[in-house]
Image 1 (cartoon, rainbow, N blue to C red):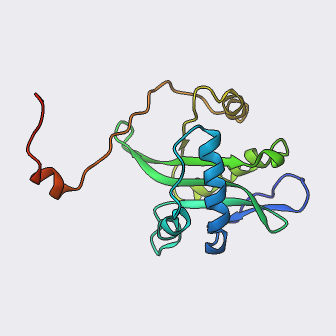
Image 2 (image 1 turned 120 degrees about the vertical axis):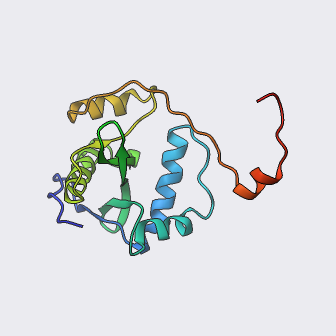
Length: 174
């Protein structure tokens, strides 16, 4: 991970790469983030599930944290993704969250800038993400940072184990 830009002056806080010892705090922040976005609760074992994804020899994603005097008060996670239309990779900013008590001090923008810097170090030229339509504060924040929105509807479809799909007879008219 490259050196990160200096954080804004807001007390004794710094932005740094997450470590395995941060996982319980990251899991708590993820739970708060999910609740804020009116999403389903995170799994109880989230910290355990995140560890191999963030800290293996070939991680699936990376996490940066805002460390305020030893307390993790914000985080951002990102991964490399692929665009068929552009035949290129980009960074997908999966999460960016700062606790309410630490908002308004520039840490969200510092995290976003740090993700951009880290993504560039990973060889990608663009960061993409989404936020709920109702989250007007986040939309305003991202636009002030110079981001442009693209209207889309996000879908998700659960997968099923291959063995269960083969064993189950087809149902319905489809």
